[in-house]
Length: 199
Image 1 (cartoon, rainbow, N blue to C red):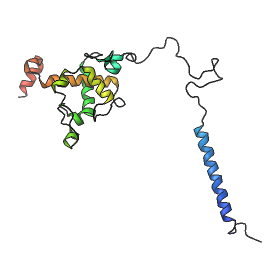
Image 2 (cartoon, helix red, strand yellow; image 1 turned 45 degrees about the horizontal axis):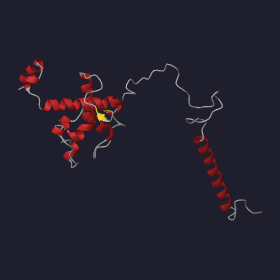
Image 3 (tube, rainbow, N blue to C red; image 1 turned 180 degrees about the vertical axis):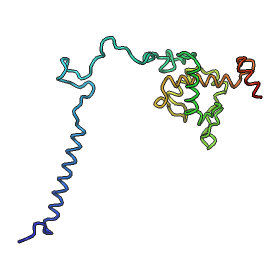
């Protein structure tokens, strides 16, 4: 009597086992891939209107107050850069701007905005100094737009920095520019005394 696992039958058995494993894997993959879910704008028999996508509940209020504000979201009004900050300027906003500037911008622009960041010191092309006359005269919306879309070798920060944070950075850039050419007489008296004591 011949052994069932004889030499002649081994390739056939190995092929059958391989095909079985392959079918099992394909079955698992399809079940996970074709899970029971609806895709947007798909037809559905569940709802009376036969639509998967549902309308907003009446009187729904958007959580983001800036959602429909073009100036806030693009830095432009009628395709012209805005010249004023589209949100209240306060110390908290400037601190947020400084924090994000130090994280994202200072590596190229430097902490002082002169374009001498650490990456530049290691051979990367230097960006323009934020204290150049051209950038001092640029509308504040220009800085928001550059952070949103990128410029030259600078890529877009839209996916990393929220619109509010981009405006905060733009406000902080203005503060940096002002501080670069400020005189002691422009400093509030309480701070002036503090600065003079540090000399």
